[in-house]
Image (cartoon, rainbow, N blue to C red; front, side):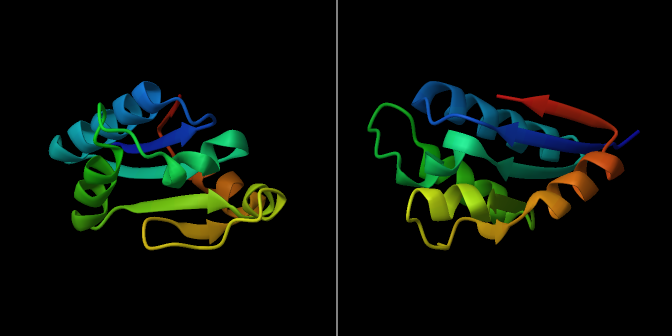
Length: 108
């Protein structure tokens, strides 16, 4: 039975971010409804340039399946970051709604 899954990424470690996105893509392949939310240092995920882990490729695969990646706007502003093509600027209200609606939450 498909579930609603929320994946929260809180830090920019390349291997962990890569694993989180691979997990999100796998869950989507199991017909789950999956959303990713970047918060705290995790918003820096979009800045990771790592040849060992194809983070951008995993993110693009996720998005191409109609899934969304949200990013904490306050965390982005703190780091002087702007919205980009991989994620949508969001807020705590949206995170709260996603948590309330989700069957399972996984944090990386």
